Length: 74
Image 1 (cartoon, helix red, strand yellow):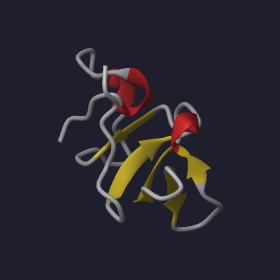
Image 2 (cartoon, one colour; image 1 turned 180 degrees about the vertical axis):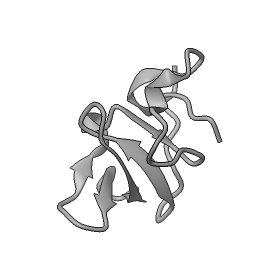
Image 3 (tube, helix red, strand yellow; image 1 turned 90 degrees about the vertical axis):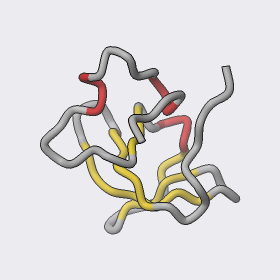
Image 4 (tube, helix red, strand yellow; image 1 turned 45 degrees about the vertical axis):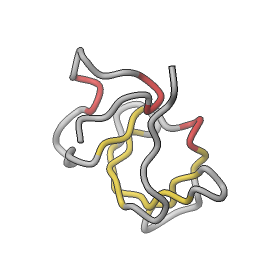
């Protein structure tokens, strides 16, 4: 299965570590997400990412979704 990644420079919602949700910008060159406040987080460390989530929704609640950013609800 091919892992789906955000577009370079795209701002998405990430879940990292489990239970913490916040927006971050994806950097394709380093395959990492950078939140507004804090260091970059490697994509392999992110549990899920989504274009449509918001802070009060658990990304992993979608039973059709895949772990490790494999699928998104875009």
